[in-house]
Figure 1 (cartoon, rainbow, N blue to C red):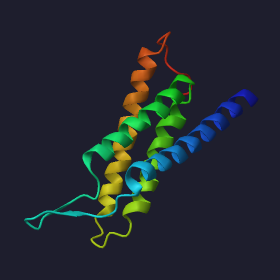
Figure 2 (cartoon, rainbow, N blue to C red):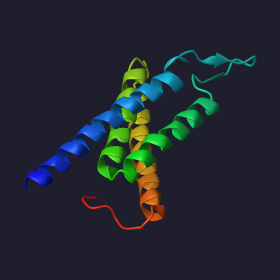
Figure 3 (cartoon, rainbow, N blue to C red):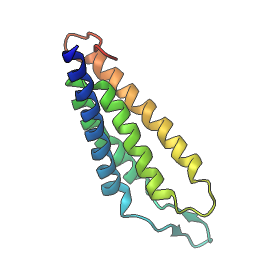
Length: 135
């Protein structure tokens, strides 16, 4: 019973660490760019550029893969999902249109699916190729 509790505590701690790291990566890649770009024809884009979002996604591969290899699959997937969701909510909640909720929901679903797919791929290619217990 104690070993089971220790595994649960490790999953929770790893999830919290993943959420914190994900929020820090969001701030590093996306947090500093808050202005929309106005083009000559009056249209606006932004505030993020494609390279910033790609940089965030690629940066998240490292902690997710590292955590999955160390058998913290649940913490990796849920931590990244929570970190992205909370960061998007915090960053976008001042939107006057009220549509930020849709974007936050899409970030939550995308973060979960993306991190789960990466975790599954890491489990499949990991030496030994065995499924992770507790998943």
